[in-house]
Image (cartoon, rainbow, N blue to C red; front, side, top):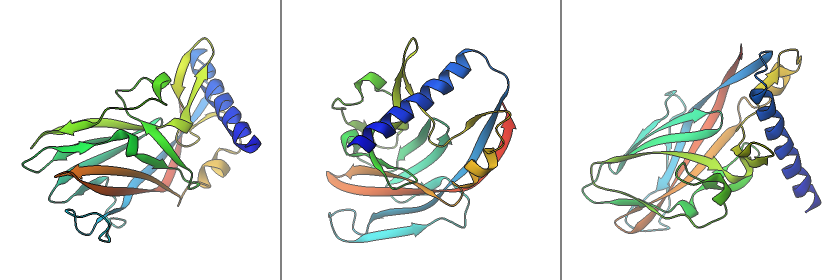
Length: 215
């Protein structure tokens, strides 16, 4: 319990430091850009019945962030502070996302609750209404893990970086830090209700490389 409190405090401090630097308009910064691509997708073997096994789609050789089956067409976009996606409903009936059942799994296997872009960060612990996606239509959304959210005095509630991305220009350990994340995975469990049957889609992303630039 004490370790958990220490981790939360450390995270809040990092978020606070980052936004203070930005607010001061500091120009002597380096930014790490990570290449994150969709590695695999796990979905039910039988989409019309729960707990009938898992079908795994290997996308590791395609360098893509798009996945399609006969029900959905989804494209992911990795941003420093969120995982964004565009989800198209290919079916002839509505499909549903219950945001309270969505989970984010970090590179260290820590599973966390999320909020999406229509939720105020201060309300991260409250119940979230479901999203209905009508037939042949799409939504654009964002995944923000609650463990990345913190309160910065005189600034408000903010969502921090998924991976360490902002460094002082004279930091000699940028490559040492960033390289430790290459090869690791981020995951999103996105349950989608198709004809009232819950289909657990697990999207697995791999951090394949990084580059460093000035901010």
